[in-house]
Image (cartoon, rainbow, N blue to C red; front, side, top):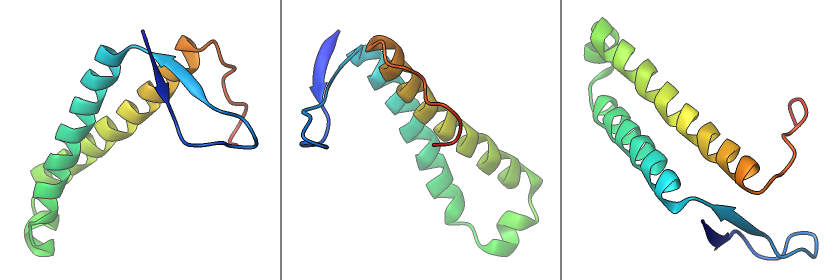
Length: 90
């Protein structure tokens, strides 16, 4: 476990979080790979992209991977720091 500093003073509070650097690094690698693949797909022309179901499926999958990775990092920070889970849709 390591301590990382996030942001500056927020509401007069200095924020520090405990996290597992290896876990965060692994998840960030997955997010980065998914975003790279999405970037590659964005270079396709609209017609080429929209007429190829494999491109559309790949874009959906990689978008889901990136979103889930972001949620996993948030859940890890909440769990590692014994924080309360957010209620509802903030």
